[in-house]
Image 1 (cartoon, helix red, strand yellow):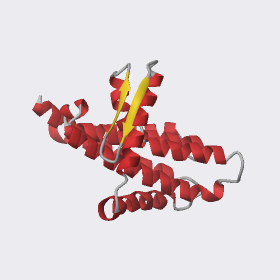
Image 2: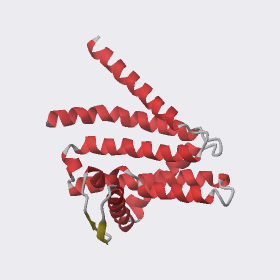
Image 3: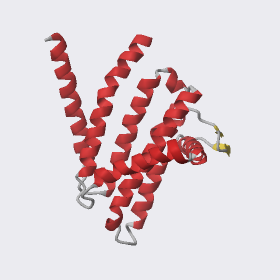
Length: 218
């Protein structure tokens, strides 16, 4: 099993790179923001600096994490109660602790989604195009926030997902988060096509592994 986990982990690394490059190409195509890719990178870098050198946002992450457990429970037809949140840990009682409820906080960047909802609501009342750069910046900031804490949470708590392999788990979560973030962006910007993004990832992944296979066995 360890060999299989290691093999899967290695296979996922190129996909992480391909998804990242396709994500960057997609947001760079947004006409409203000539340097949208740079805004996204700056947002991600700023959060990295905040997280590593300045201060941590532990309470915000724990709160969002537990809210996602509760939200996933409601979506599964269950009930959530007695939610407790502190700067170090949190908990919530759920009546349907299924696979989706367990994984939801890791797979869905809650604050990235919240930023998108606010942007969408504001677009009905004001001309939001002038703030597109700020939106992309916040997407990068909140997505990096989510990924950094998710990686730490998985490492420290040793969840069931981690037991399947830390590297493969975090790679899978990284891919899913970028896909979700791109889906959000594609719903708010006409220049961005989610179908083209998925197609690009598929074509590049297929080309990479086929080329790799030919080099080894043909």
